[in-house]
Length: 170
Length: 189
Image 1 (spheres, each protein chain N blue to C red):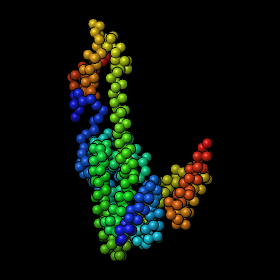
Image 2: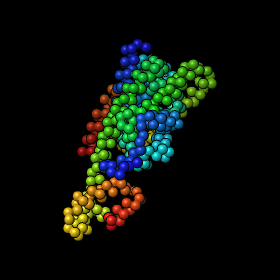
Image 3: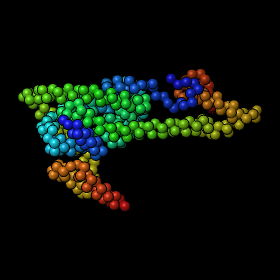
Image 4: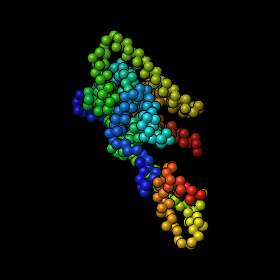
């Protein structure tokens, strides 16, 4: 198969990727039209058999795409169908995964800060400190810091420091 | 796992590298006949305990919202979650390499032995099953469509254009999708 035809195959499957919002089966008739009716690279029977074979094989159900590409033009055909078909959604997914991870990190940070500013009953920490510390010293920096470290250590832990910390919280 | 004075207590993701992901997804893809989701959950959540049930469900839900092949999106999201870009690449490579080789081997066998009567009969049977699965998928989607004449008009027109007239899908979509969206939008306002 000529290089220009491989290129055409690549561009065609890239277009399919953007149309296949409803998943791979939604472009099956279109693929059949292009590969069997327009170009006659394989017969209709071969198309059906290759599709069935790929359904029987392990892995994701899109494996009929490399298989059809392979039977048209060998390894180059498999690459020229699979890579353009998969790349757009993979790129989008990576971007979303990246944004998702970042928003999670922000959320966790905000959540931690909120937790540190209030005591176990949800009162502002400063109020608790002034109520507890009768000697009148400014305990904010003094108390908040070890408390902060201890809470990080604790999580759901059961070691002695944590238990003591939780008792202090009450 | 978590250092005493670590500034971020939220992250409790275990250390999983790109190579671990490649191996895990090669494993998943080779045992997952039918559905990928079931086996991914089994390995990642139940056996390896890399994620909690909730974290897994959240990632799967997000990956199903995105266009493209759900299994591939899920693989990329899980890979990214554990090891960033390298993890996503490793997981995706694991997910696709082995099935590609298997399917190619099947293609070679099909070319060589496809004409044998016994193989022909088996292939006819498998094709029937594959067609049945496609119809079932279509029916599952059709059930969700509202029972009003307008959506079904577009279903019928698309079917006639692509299935009967054999017009290019892109042309049919470009002609019908704007009308369908505009009509649905006008109905809401």
